Image (cartoon, protein in one colour):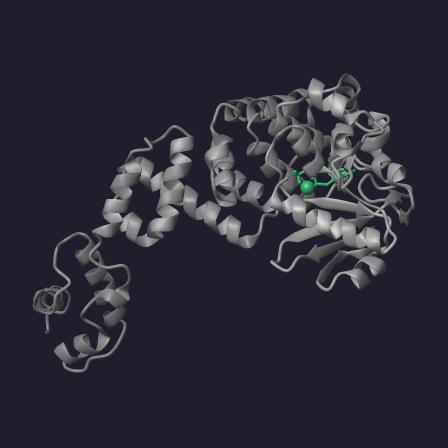
Length: 405
Ligand code: ATP
Ligand code: MG
């Protein structure tokens, strides 16, 4: 058993010592049964949020009203510990009207989305599986706990989660689950965009993305995601790309936007409607601009200088995934960057004071103009970053632009 589970066992033991029940649940149990690397570890317990907070020295309240407390171990590993609960009525297809804490594990498992996610594991590794999730894992199917349409009407995000799990695990959707999505797909519009964005990213990064996207389109769910209606052909083509190689969120969204073949206005609308964090929006826009430049004139010193190495390599990675560039050109970009004469204006060995001195103390806008021209001249190799050479270059510049000089 790995270290993450080992520490999880200690948390479970502490809860038990205090008279509560506690089990591993959710993705970590599913992934263990599949021999797959686990992500985060979730623990379900009969202890209430207040009791959890009283037992552990370091906790973070991330949603006590829903029963979830994060427990931090001494080395700052975090574990989500959630009180056994059932959800009250759902009237808006996204939130339960109330959360009711319960004493039985089985009731808690019953409110979970899919059978494969509704399995609990004791600290000894004993499996508790009232909905036969393990059988479904072995058959590689995703099946809702209970009647699909009921579960999707409670929380419409579950439809997108089903497709994202299909993409991550290469599982198919059990018939009623598939038909339920086809029937209820329009309810996805009631779900907050932030929750959909998280699932969409996971879907795109899944190993079975081709299959995942096919399901997204065949269920018709895509039409209820921002700006994807009518983009069936482009989406299906996207499935052939090796998206899981992408390291950053901004790279994933850049590939997506590029593949959907939008015009400039549509790019803006798309980015705005997915409500990505500002920083990611900015990176995507910068990536798209740089990519366009590189497609027109190839990699040049100016571009690498202005974009910096990190952005340049991200764009390279994106272009490789899109089949627009060879992996091997990464070396060229690195060499271009290493050989840049300067990395910012500050690196120029001639500054504003030197310039004023040369021009007899004349201040003004011309200083920033000449520095910007000097920057370009250096990048184009027209002069060297060395004082004598730059002085001569400045004399020439002054004569050219200021006949009275
Ligand atoms: P991952 O490996 O991506 O974290 P996960 O299965 O752990 O997958 P989470 O989103 O972390 O997924 O949720 C943890 C568990 O909570 C799920 O396994 C499932 O049992 C339950 N769950 C999460 N979201 C929902 C939902 N919308 N409806 C019902 N149960 C849910
Ligand atoms: Mg999880």
